[in-house]
Length: 208
Image (cartoon, rainbow, N blue to C red; front, side, top):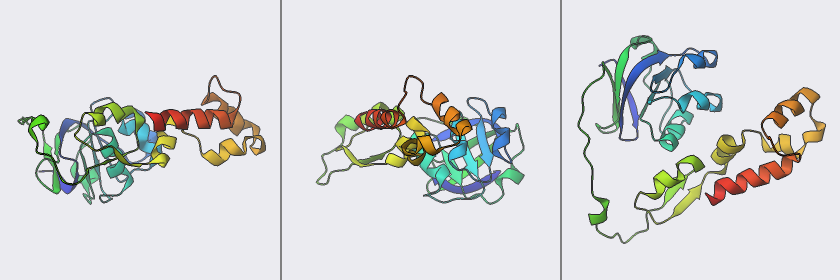
């Protein structure tokens, strides 16, 4: 075993480890690689979407890496302490979150069994189990799970994933420097009004 920490989710992922010291190295991560780094923030999300699993030195169940891993449906092991030291770059690893609250990172691409459950035979519950959701792109995946609807829609995640621009910047667009205005315009093709872009994209995310 190479490392262990808090398991996020119940899945298993494997691939080539990419040990990143900072966000400037994100281009080295290809689809299916395992992202290994100290910790993540919203700037890391493009590379997190390409990873088959995520491993961080720092963090807990409510850290950024844990939240995004749940939304993306990929296994993550957070709070490992020294994963960036014990896991070698380009090393084949298997990340397991299927062994309880402690997640493990093993050397090599290990074989594992995948068991399916027939949710149609589950008994009815006396309580309504609802979901938290914040990534519109996964709404249809989540709709296949037994649930009583949406209990909490995380608007900040919808804004981050579907809009990618701070609301204040769109509200005060005319007050921004010209170079920043140009950058924002590149993120809203087909729109002349920043506020309309924000309202339309937010509405699409919520309605999904």
